[in-house]
Image 1 (cartoon, rainbow, N blue to C red):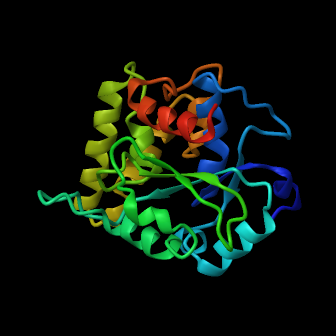
Image 2 (image 1 turned 120 degrees about the vertical axis):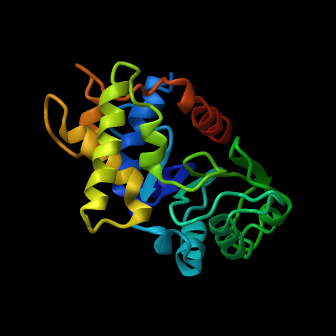
Amino acid sequence: MSNESVSYSKHLWVEGKTELQLLPFLAHANGINWPDTHPYPVYIHDKNGFNNLANNAKISSFFRSHSKITHFGIILDADDLPPIGEDNNPQKRWKEICSIFVEFIPEIQQNQLSGKGLVFNVKANEVILNDIKFGAWVMPDNLNPGMLETFLSRLISDEFPQLWQHAQTSVKTARSYNAPFREVDLDKINLRTWLTWQNKPDSQILTAIEPDKPLLDLTHVNAQAFVHWFKLLYEL
């Protein structure tokens, strides 16, 4: 845990480094002032995987050591979940999160995740020392299976529709030739395949948002539900 984070009141937990690096660009593109150095409007923590994000001991330790916290959010992937059925049951991943966070945030049981994400107020308790605002977003859109790459693929500039379609077709062809990637990683493979075909071949997502010629439109209409959730949670 970073010592500098203790001085922050607004915190966000994410599953990986890509979210940590990308979210400031997304926020800045949508009108949120995000400087290159501390202090940031929100302190983003890379938890290095779902198991570290959904860890009772780490959650307890975090809240007890951050006495200034006023806003807390989590972003996680739904890359191994089935779509919501006709009975509108909560997603499996969200159920997992609820079962863990309910120990610290009892109010989570009375709040349901929707396509707009989730934001609600939490009363101070034995672990959380202040009243806080809590929020959750499950990639890509809180309703369907997917991951950060699923969300980002919806931001591909309208300048590249045919190339994007060809990348997806090529990945399907590779699968028919017994390419060993996991089905759950399909969206990740599609996006990174498309990125390697650009003018500066690179499978790293950050190359897709370089200011000189961005490949992803961070102000795309498909990003706005997430942006609205982020601004609402952190009052930005």
